[in-house]
Image (cartoon, rainbow, N blue to C red):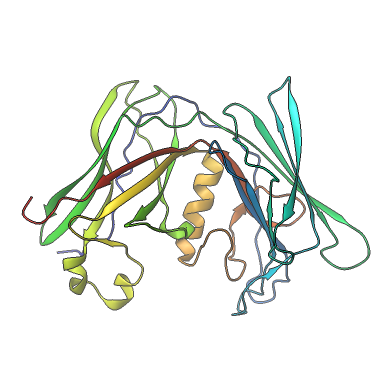
Length: 304
């Protein structure tokens, strides 16, 4: 029998907004001779936090060094409803961290457009370059209920993440889940849950399985190489999931990072080939906005 890894069930249909569009540009890198390039990554959410953008310099593809943080950038972000707009200057709390944040907490707003600008002299030629990106925030996903059930598939025990929600109708949607298990957040992009829906024509879906994790008791059934890339669950584990609907462009970005297996939030060790980006001027990374719906549940205990 084929071994089962943490399986995505790419069936989900719910949510109440059409997919947001985003201009993307595909950049192909010669992995043997690729030069250093800016790597810019940031998300704007509807959570009331200091929104962050990270600015790094990539290492060469086969370079094992950690990406160099860029400390001398001017980072601004503008939000625009079409009739009202506001600009923000993002600064570093710790100079040299490469992490630029809004001065005060702010909440992204569904339906608003967000424009990012990063100005810096990346190539040290005495002239500043500007790197820009734009995205639009959709409505937050509303999950009516969330639970974790246990099931057997052949010789394997799986923990299924199940949701109930209203489908938005005849539109193709893309979704993401960022999660913690027992308080530990899995922030690597390659560990994100990402899936697209199958249209259910506006139907209400109840207890729909959207993702599965293997039981830790089955870990020995997998090779060491397979097991090191998997997330296992145990009876009684507590899980928090932040579900979001995202653009097709960001969905593709997550999947491309996952295919590299070393994709991390926010940066990768070296610039993987053929990773899409919506950052202009030859930079890598991604800038996006999405609403967050936070849900939690516990895995069934033993014998339940």
